[in-house]
Amino acid sequence: MVPATSDRIAVHAEICRRHAHTIPGTPANPNHIHMNRRLLFAALALFATIGAANAQVRTANGTISISVPKAPWYLGFKASGFQLKEKTEPKNGRAAYYFFVDETSGMNLSFFVEPAEEFNDAKQYRDMAWEKSRGKFGVPTDVVKSNTQTCATIAYTLEEVGGIKLNQRNMNAHFVKEGFWIDAHLSKVAFERSEQPLFDALISSMVFTTKTPADTDTSTSEKHDALFSFQQGSAAYLKEDYSGAATWYSEALEMEKQRRTLSDEYWHVLVDNLGMAQALTGDLEAARTTFNYGASRDSTYPMFYYNLACTHAEMGDMGTCIADLRQAFRYRNNMLNGEQLPDPRNDSSFKRYLSNDTFMKALSEMESRGK
Image (cartoon, rainbow, N blue to C red; front, side, top):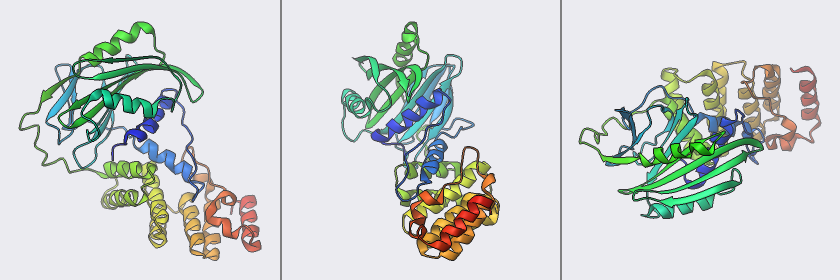
């Protein structure tokens, strides 16, 4: 579930904003007003820091090489200062996302790898990606296209992203190699024109090498942990594939029930997002079970009760809904960092009750007393 071409826009915009040390808002879902908060947490989950390289990322003699299990090659580049910070690797072995950072130079480098199903020419992929992304996250200036024997490149500057002055230089190099499309994206904020040769040299250093038989052993490639499943669930959630999200999140939660490995923040988001994904696919009973499980493990986290209230409201059980909301308001000071308890008056789950005197009286009491 590596982001498709159109979804790369959102991933790239997130990276641009993170350069400026700010967290963007996200659009609200029409079914649950508070989902905008969950979309943000799902997006950030995709950028979980990893601790070590895996078999598809290797370093030797100042060269870092990346690949995917099903590809017969490695793509290497000369950049000893870069460190792998983030990754997304679907189980199909034919796609991946890798994100590297050079703390010294301030340069960032990402790779998207996926099957080349539309074209067999790098220039066509470059032009397609550029047309789909141009203007989505800023007004590009100093645009330069070029072609080499191995790749098609495009360089451009984003002076401002989301109202933030960045002067970010970007350079994408598109490759097509033995059935795979590789999009390498290099960027740096506070760019100086004298630094352009650094971009050119790094792209020029990218060379393919053939894997050995040992490299192509994928017997362990299907193994993954709860964080991997959580990330894949978040990718599906962002694409509004709630059935897929529920499947991945359920797998992650089962792993967590056996042994806790996720941070407390991610664990809470996992349970919360799983329940909402289940509700959005119409399985309210499963959602209720999930939120009740969350509350049984952390009885003071308000969003479990808030989402239980949403679920019971959708089920038409106003009495239980009110009881759940009382618990949510009781513990409203225990939200995760950056969260706020949603306003039930603006949540479509409670729309049917907004003209009900009993519900509105109870809600007013909760708002004034926090009970």
